[in-house]
Length: 284
Ligand SMILES: Nc1ncnc2c1ncn2[C@@H]1O[C@H](COP(=O)(O)OP(=O)(O)O)[C@@H](O)[C@H]1O
Ligand code: SF4
Ligand SMILES: [Mg+2]
Image 1 (cartoon, protein in one colour):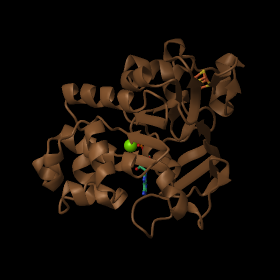
Image 2: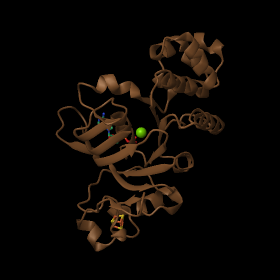
Image 3: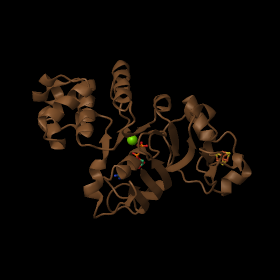
Image 4: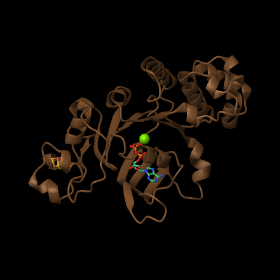
């Protein structure tokens, strides 16, 4: 299990001598389990990719705790544990090294040629592609190589960050079907991260909704969304997150249901039933 306990991450805004900061993640707690398809949704700027970098051990949080399979992660062990969580990025043309052949890219993850050919077959690629370079492949083929790379690294968890955004619709469908096939026995923990609510909802058993660096809802079924932000997101009516910080609820400025109390007080995540959590005074 990947477990995050009240993670904070803050970045400096603007040039390096600037003293202004942006709080990108604010006390984010979540868990991702083996065999589960987890979704994380939120508009652009919500902090999703920052969360992905922390979950895949590319960065440490400023505050809070991350553990993987029960072991706490720190600066000393993060390098060694990194392979457990594989990451497939949005744009395969930039995540693959253009100077390297597909074979050398895959060999970086695993040198066993038989295993490479088996995985290549699993992701639906021909052996002849091994001697080519990324720019000689289509976008869909490049994304299959990126998936093969994490499979070869024997990762237990895969994070897919906006993994279909750079692909056309029919290629998206083929990649999504491929992922469902790869994890049909639920050997891995898959984490789908996207602003595309429909896609994530279709693929995931459980979803976290991230708004301005905070989890505002956790649910098993987005058809029964409760948080006003999730409802707006489902209607596709949101733009990019602004960085305006409210004293009260972070969704106050846009919320159709806002009350006087929401202006000054911050709602806490409240458990509703067995596997649902919502951060909103409407459910107090
Ligand atoms: N390395 C960084 N340095 C400074 N600001 C960053 C950095 N990474 C992300 N940010 C800022 O954090 C916010 C969230 O970014 P990101 O995690 O990429 O969100 P999302 O993936 O949901 O679009 C944005 O305002 C972005 O500008
Ligand atoms: S706490 Fe208030 S402002 Fe925030 S989402 Fe709920 S109703 Fe809207
Ligand atoms: Mg992102």
